[in-house]
Image (cartoon, rainbow, N blue to C red; front, side, top):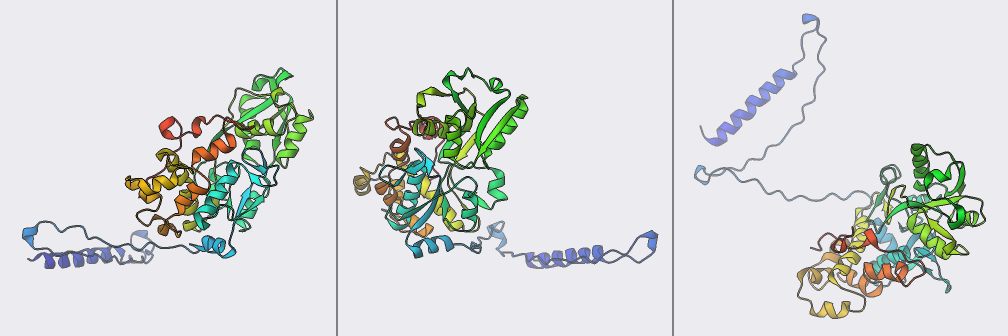
Length: 390
């Protein structure tokens, strides 16, 4: 029997067995009820006939066309059509996003907005910054009032699913802390028994505080406020015994807003993990990819030693294949994102690599200095790592 005939015989034998198994039973036999009709889904089996002397047939190579969900490409089209990026930020957080004395938005989170504009337009200035409170930040993203939220926002499962967002890449690994007046005599969580703690409304900070204090059996009174200024204003006036937030916020606000920063200290306690980074809406994977790889480009540039000062020289002289792809000298990585091939070059030239962005806003020479720690490259003992540019 030839192989072709054998395959056909086996197919019809299997079909007969399936039909026999699905045949309804006669009513009343053995007390059984009639079996419901089962809908059989047809399966098409593709076989490749190969002469016996060549051995087993190879696995067929199927060309798969990737489906694009509704909404794919719409965000980039809208951004390019209006000629600017609308980026949601905090606006009240020194070192991350705030209005500087010149009236411009500055800070770590704001610079990632500029990096995205540089990738899209080749112009880091084509950004409209939209300050958002903790209460409204998710609504304005859901309703497309902003294109991306680059604000101190913690990645969590509920936000990633129920709220309909995609967190892109962690740009800042943080943890929740507690700040108290230096002369308060408070040195542990238990010292806050019966005290009042200032916290922002609608944040994971508020929930983490409640979880921690319940676990430790410590009673306290939360004093809840809508935004940064109100929260730390109340703390500075002595209306709270302590204030809690991400350690980065406590550090930057203490140095930027409190009258005498040195009069306040952070307790030696970490209440939670707080991975922070930009987020976008579900439904547009192209935009999700653009924001992700914009951030990865800053990681990779630092790893390769490419800065805003030397990117031009490296672009013209490098023999490293991955750097050539990153900077658009070879390949078409930019086109795959829907951008031009010099997209990453523009990010680095106009905004800088991750280390430059960090040092400019949170580095040792700034008023909001925060040691890099976990926010160092993996090669320096940190957690930052870029997938390959290929």
